[in-house]
Length: 238
Ligand code: 5GP
Image 1 (cartoon, rainbow, N blue to C red):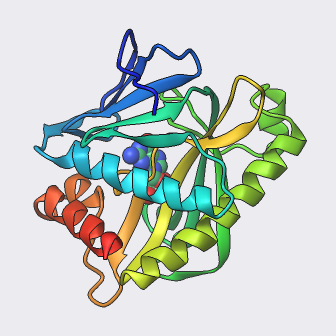
Image 2 (spheres, protein in one colour; image 1 turned 30 degrees about the vertical axis):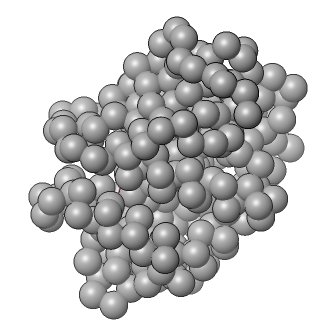
C-alpha cells in the first residue's frame, strides 16, 4: 500500500481539517475533537469524538462502497484520520428524512417523531451566509450548482443510500430519523458521495426508548455527547 502522509493544510473547518498528500488526487481528512452547533455559536471540545466520527464514517462509507455507492473513502490512516479521494465540493446539501424532526417538523408544524409516510429528500443551497436555504432543481441549475441530470442522479443515489442505512441502523436497534450528505466531483467528473456520515450529521434514536444518540445531545443539552456516539459505534460494530 502506498505510503501517503499529510503535506499542506488545504482547509481548516470547525470540526475537520483537510490535508494534501504526495498524490494530487488524494487527501487526508482529520477529524477534530470539537463539536459546534447553531453556526458555531455553541462550541465545545470533547475528547474522543473525532475518533468516533472518523471510525463511524469510515465503516459506513466502506459498506456503502460494497453496495455500489461510489464515495470518497479509501482507508483509515489513524483513529482520527482517513485517506480519501480528492473532490471538488458540490454546494448542495442533501437532507433525507424518515421521521419528522428538527427544522422539517417546525416548518410543516408536525410533531417530532411522527413517521414520514414517504421518504422526503430536501436539497439545500450550501451557504452559511443564507443559512442553507431549501432550493428546487430549477434554482440549483440557475445557480450553476449541477445539471438537471446530475440532480436526478444525486436524488436517486441519496434514496438508495437511505435504504441501505435505514436497514443497517435498524439492525443495530437504531432509528435513522434523518441525515445530511454531500457530494463532490472527482478530477474525471464523476459525482461521488463525500463529506462524512456520522452522529454529527444524522439524527439517531434508540428504537426502543427513543433516546437521542446524536449531535442533538449537544444541541439540546441532553447528556454527555460522547456516550451517544460510543453507543452508536459499538452497536454498528457488532
Ligand atoms: P435540521 O434541518 O433539522 O437542522 O437537520 C436535519 C438533519 O441534517 C439532521 O440530522 C442534522 O444533523 C443534519 N444537518 C443539517 N444541517 C446541518 C449542519 O449544518 N451541520 C450538521 N452537523 N448537521 C446538519
